[in-house]
Image (spheres, rainbow, N blue to C red):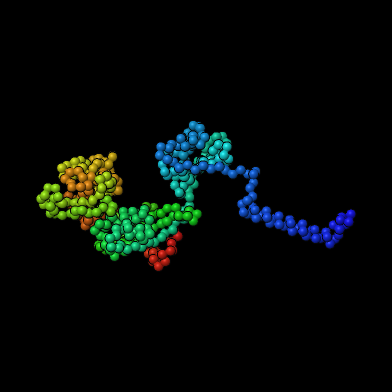
Length: 419
């Protein structure tokens, strides 16, 4: 009883209450710390089970779905939903991804997410009646314009100088394609020349995903400072224009094969390397290895495809009432390219070879203007289209805004323009 009395003593009781309060507080704090630290696990709420599959060569939709336990009825329903609601009827190896979602590891698939690009997802969910609902989700892009400048050093190619300046390889290829309408990268690139590129970078949730469009490019070429700006017209179409609003994309490229070295120029009197006597060389020769794709220098229609002793395998394209181009010494023709075929600019029409009177693999490229052979590297080429008055006014205002942004970025290389 003494112990009981001592325990019931008011002084002792108050001390016990305080001690109990302290213990309860510590337990509460410890519980919160465990919860915040991620140590608390609920056994009553099972987490979803997700399986990611990248489409490989030879994979079909049916194979991928059946491998995940779906039946033929599901395969047909999903294929139909993808075609009707998402416009997807084929899969691309090493590009498309599937995410299969189950409530737990022992349950059948309840949701399928097809990811055809970083900016698009197609969700397929299984309804109570066994059907499949299809919903396309567009991923919002955080697009930023960044600015890079470079200089050509001794022994540089434009590509090497661009990489050194921190410009991505894919953007450099786009710039190359743009400038090839105006420049010859073999003859016009010299040490000391400067260039700049404004281009888009696309982010999602703070992480860079890919690069976007080239917005502006400038190059100190031998023939003068070349500038091009990307601009969207009032009809929604986009194009590239010079600083005055004239179309910057010409109807023909001066150099069909990017970065190819000129081995023989246009000349009215050249000693033929095979025949040994002097005669006109009516085109320009570009060195390239056998099998290199040859793109059409401009859109047009094939008017000749065949073989002759001098040109070997050749293709001739008529672009309009003024210009024609000819491509010779091909090792073979591109599939589907024949007389009468309409071709797009950049479309492969054949492959580099050494057929006909040739001492090695190269492309012989000719430009014919009004029936007369002209030098592809110097002939004045017409622009595809210029802006009308209303669009030109908008372009000039846009160009001033863009130039102002470029000026700030040039002074602050780590800044970007939020698009």
